[in-house]
Image (cartoon, rainbow, N blue to C red; front, side):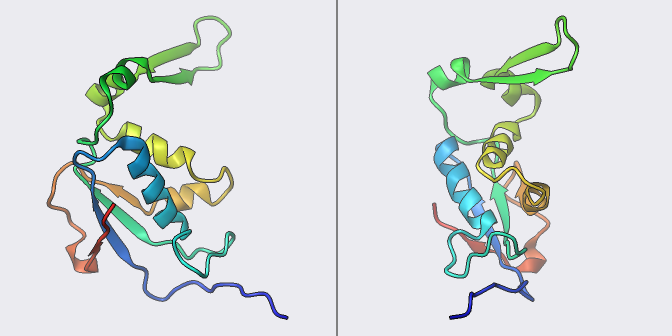
Length: 142
């Protein structure tokens, strides 16, 4: 019995997701599934068969108020003293509105060499009009 290995597709699909009033974590799970090709029957983990995802209104997702204050993001400068910086979700939204969604999707992808190539196929847009109309994207209902 032969093992099936998917080949690179000639035409990749483009999907549009409207993030307005969607829960952040549920939205990130569905986007990660589409980016990784897990929603297809011919999933092959090491082959570049991924589709593109455009997220409209990427800054208008929904989280609870407790999560807004309790969720922490950390960054370390690698210095021993005072190297750890802590940010709340509210701080991050003020500075970079699309960061929490991008960070959540990135954490749901495998930590290997393909992660950066998968993340390049995620397009976050903070408005409803986008420059990807020539690719004829399909609406993805989440």
